[in-house]
Amino acid sequence: TNKMADKIFADGFSWKRRDDAPEFVIGNLSCKVEDATKFLTENAKNGWVNMNVLMSKNGKPYIELDTWEAKAKTTDEDY
Image (cartoon, rainbow, N blue to C red; front, side, top):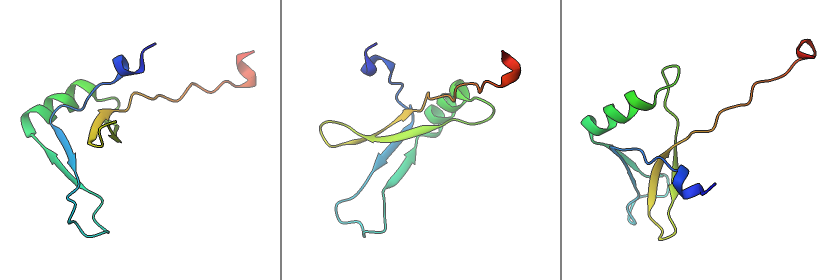
């Protein structure tokens, strides 16, 4: 499976860090309300949307949908 094809970019969300920001400032998150609301509504699971802030190969941060899901635990009763 091509990992790039699996990426779902978080529409309406932007992450930046100013070069002159103080060390304690990790970055700035901006949301375009209309796009972000649509993205959140379409991707919500149990009322939550998980996203990852990642760094592209060209050094720019981006946000994508975190699609990781825990595997169901098996118990002795399942056998």
